[in-house]
Length: 346
Image (tube, rainbow, N blue to C red):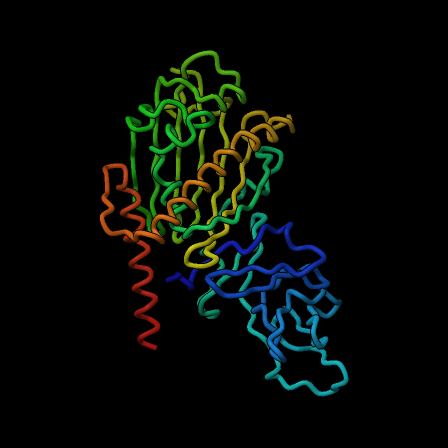
């Protein structure tokens, strides 16, 4: 089941160009496009005439034109042109979805349009501050349930094993990290410190560390599927633990998981360079170092999904590092129950 009364990332803003973009979100076919004024729009990917996918049509000045019989729909879903027909009934329309463009993302609301509150969209201003936080982004299709990727992001004890050659480092440093967790109104936050630790290979490449470091990782999960990350390191004993983190090695990541089906999702992610901002190559290098780790995550959760499809969840156990995952899953269960209860009441 999906939480529908929530904002999900439908696309990166720069994905919407000269052609319609087809996406399946919460197992519904959606077509995304920009109108002549550059406004982003999202409609059900189905013409109301003969059910042809609108994504197989083309963009015209008035909106999106069905590629089968030429009906044209504007961004609200209203049919504004029918070839050979002067009068068009107001009932000739397709469903439109609330859409908000913010921080280089295009956010979509799949549930009750009357409940779509744009103030609930996550703030991530770093995408818009290219001078202080030059950044690069990507999107990976993943053949796994979106919450498996959220689980993966919020349990960092896997870093020392799955990502040992890149951002991971010593497994023991992650398992024994100082951990502080806080529950919020919209999810959960945690901070991990690995003081006086050996920097992982990616950190050495990026910042040229010569010795041990104090390393931090701050994560915030905002339900249902956004994870904000601030990560960095500084030479050991130089004050990072006490709050003096400027001037060291640091970067910010955004992770957004959008459910496609029950067993597939889109992984929207970005990395923002906060240490050598005037060097474009530093941002490119950061991206090149981080991207392979997310491919490792992708491969693992897809394999995990395959086993769950085959064997189910019976017999699985929790360990101490699952504490945050358990809190998140219970949070999601409450949201699903609330939404189901509201629908039943209606």
